[in-house]
Length: 369
Image (cartoon, rainbow, N blue to C red; front, side, top):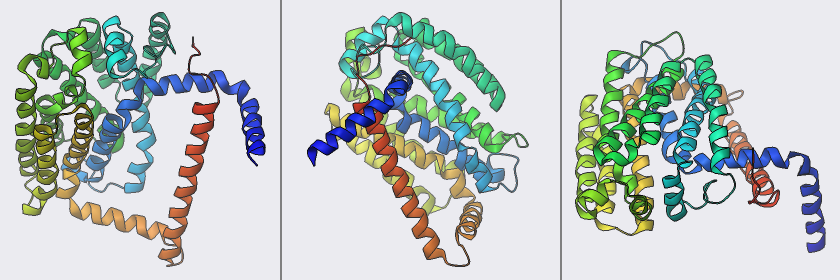
C-alpha cells in the first residue's frame, strides 16, 4: 500500500513538472506577503465590507445589497494584496531588512535564498506599473499613488529607521490609505464615502498610530540587529507595553462612543481590548507577543465591525436576504447542510493542492527571474 502511495505521489509530481516554474513563482510571491494576510489584508477587507453594508453610516448608499458587496471581496483583496506585495518587496529587498529577516522571519524569499536582491529589484520594477494599472481599473488609483510615495519614504528614505514617531506615523497613514481604497471598492462606483466615513478612517488611523507598535514587541532581536529605532528599543520593553495597553483600552471605549452605541456596543470591544492589554503586560515571551499581536489584529476587526453594529437593521436585513437566497423550496436545513459540506470539500481539496504544489512539487532553493 505504501509503495502504491509513493507511485501516486511520483506520478503527480511528474504531471506538475511543466508548471513548476509558475508554481515556484507564485509561492515566492506568497512568501513575500504570507505573514500579513491574516493580520492585515483580511482585516482591511472586512473594514471595507462592514463599512459598505452599514449603508449611510459611512457611505452615500442608502440601501446596500449584501450580495453585491460580497461579490466585490475578490477585487478588494486583489487591490490590498497587490499593494501589499509592492510594499513588502520594496521593504524586504534592502540589506538591513535581509539582516533583520534572517533573525525574525528566515522563511522570507531573500533570507531563505529563493530570490536575490537584484531579482527582487527587477520584480519590483515590473510590479509597480502593473499594480498602478490594476488600481486605475478598479478605481482607487489615487490611494495607490500615495501608497507608492509612502513606500518610498518608509523604505528608500529610511523613514522606518528615522525614529519611532515617524515610523508609526508612516505605517498609520498607510493603513488609512488601504482602508480608504478598500472601502471605495466595496461601496461601488455609484456611491462615495461620506464625511463621517472619512472621520472614521482618520479615527482608525489614529488607532493604528498609537497601538500598531505592538508588532515590534516580537521583532526586537531583528530590529536591534539593524539599528531600528522602534518603540520597545527606544523607550524600553516595559514602557512600550504600557504605551500599547493604555491606548488599546482607551480606543475600546472611544470607538463605540464615536458611533453612539449603547452599553452592549461596548462589551465586545472592551472585552477583547482588555485581553490584548493584559496579555501585553503580563505575557512577555517572544511566542506570547506573536499570539498577542494576532489577537490585537482580531481586536481591530471588532472595531471595524462597529459601523455595522450601529446599523443593526442593515445587518438584520442582509442576513435575512442571504437566508432567503440559500433556502431552496423552504428547506433551509438541507440548504445549509449542502453549503457546509461544499465548503468542507473545498477546504480539504485546497489544502491537498497546496501540499502537492508547495511541499512536494519543487525544491525550496530554486530561484526566479
